[in-house]
Length: 468
Image (cartoon, rainbow, N blue to C red; front, side, top):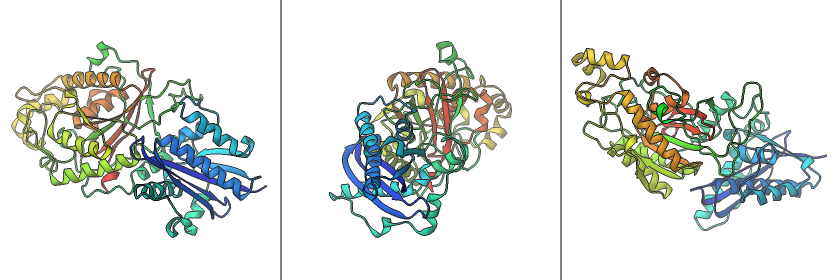
């Protein structure tokens, strides 16, 4: 009995927005491309496009041989889990599409496998070609560039994936790097200014392509907990979660997935682009000059805007009131066709008399105050600055307001070093000194999600792949 591999993908530039899908049928032994399908489908969501890509791929396999056994590989965990019967299908738009996909071939002859996005490049490319064609007012037609993969790439596609579940750290890291690959950006992620505890330039893996969770059980936040730095607040980072998904809950050790908790509220945490002070690593808080983005910072903002537009998952943009954040947020909002809402609680800490100084200059001029600040979250910078304890209360309160206003949605928060680190620290239940052990480069993205049971999933931190 013939056997085919179907790889499918779909995308939406806006979610909902202009959407398209791509599918490819492969020979599992050689990786040879046997058929391709792609189509611009108008305005739709990512999930609708992904399901339509699956349906088109299954139909293409059936056309090649109606008796074929098909192994489907997709980077959409939602589609794979729902079609495999492990997740319920709740969203009304998904149910008829899933039913349609199930009718193309007998269920016994179709199996499903999740793969990282970097291993689904062929279908992803077809989907983007279809969307590009739709933007030109045309329908997609096969081109030489995508008619077949070269032999080595084909062999790679036929290679079994690494062992481990979809959240496997190695596979997830690779997928995350691939998620932002190809995004233009002339700037570089330089060292973090605004918190003397920030490390120098560097990069970590990132969000969006696949969950790589560090899931920490945290009690649901209370007013008392929010008031205590290092308390058991639930804070999270952001991977856009597909609408209609039954996201994977926090698993107990040695057990399978737990009960459905519904879609989490998801915060995409974006540090603003560079200012003139950033490369010099000067304290730049809310008590200083409120600088604008530099030329490099504007390029970084444009790059991250394009990267987020390609993912098509952000539904709301919220910004710190400070100029560098509003400029960064506006660049993203303009690209996504959204508006910017200002949240005062996302402003940077006030560094008092340290504003505009380097760490070395503060150490020379205010050694005792600096040491006290490093030793205790209750200590404030010289001259009436804001302590980390005070900043934590403010940021936690802002977080709770945003969670209440955006339940189950994906929200981009454009903020600063201190607020982003606080959100991540609270999500992890880490002590206050953890703030000095995180790096956060300019225009970097971090990921966190908040579940209904009070758990927070910190997925990735400090990605700058979109700037390369």
